[in-house]
Length: 248
Image 1: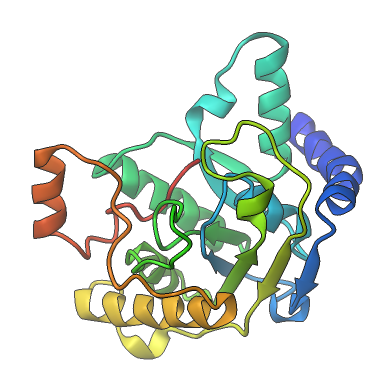
Image 2 (image 1 turned 180 degrees about the horizontal axis):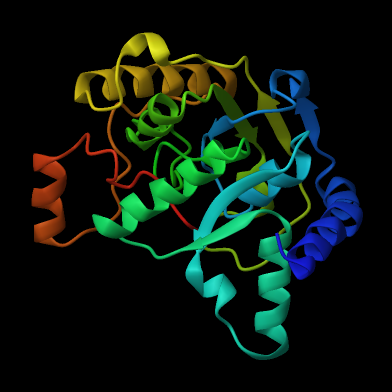
């Protein structure tokens, strides 16, 4: 970690965290369920743009997550502030996309886990626009079964009121973050097995849904796509790189 990144991290914890607590008045449940050391995956529902900052600022340990590369490539003062903020709260820049880009995203997450860090992911792939919880993509299972890391289900409530989809600026609202008991997915099988990934992912989503209380959608949360993309999804609905992560 570079000196500037270390400084940004310390600044985020020292300044941004107290400010977030003041504005959001977060209720944090189950902090002890997050292992203090070693690799761990935080698998969360996804309601708002601020979900990632909420998790990383309120978790009991440093957490990394994926964010779109544009947050790190801006110029001038605005670009510098963006890089410092997102780097300070644990964001990893990644290109959006499927195929090679999505696998790169998973590989970046795997690298953090192999270094013994905590990594946050949204199995639904993208934010829920209707409040329901959607079927999980199997990237979370691939990460867990490949790394051997436990998965802590996370439920966010109220973040959709702080910054609803389409809103440019956060609002004042109460946020609840609940960390569930860690899940050991190793009994489901090998990461190379599509069946193992599917069943393991379903177990993770069931745990998240139980914490969040959201109505299950029993479908994938697919944003509008081209005909080619629709065909690809139909042919490979459980591809672990298919919308495995949503770098907001």
